[in-house]
Image (cartoon, rainbow, N blue to C red):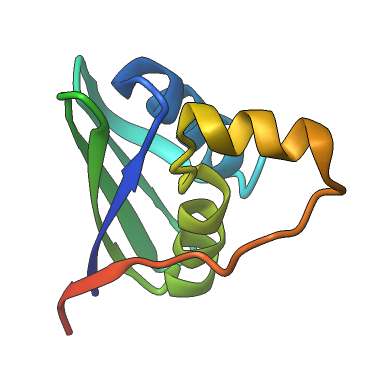
Length: 107
């Protein structure tokens, strides 16, 4: 399955989060490839490949086999589209969570 998610995190922050979630400190998958804008994890009969596209926001392309639920949870965590007024409003109001949105690129 292929997914895409937009995040306010920098590519480096997003990939560090992926290492934390999917690597030895998280799911325990093995990092089989790592470069400036991408990571590939393997284990448990499947894999997760992540590529970051920098810009005003960071687009993350994720491809997975056997790890769809974990990838969807990761996308929900990194999907933060905050504008200045949302940060201001959050300080004024109790936190309410919005459901994450993401795109399935290929099934």
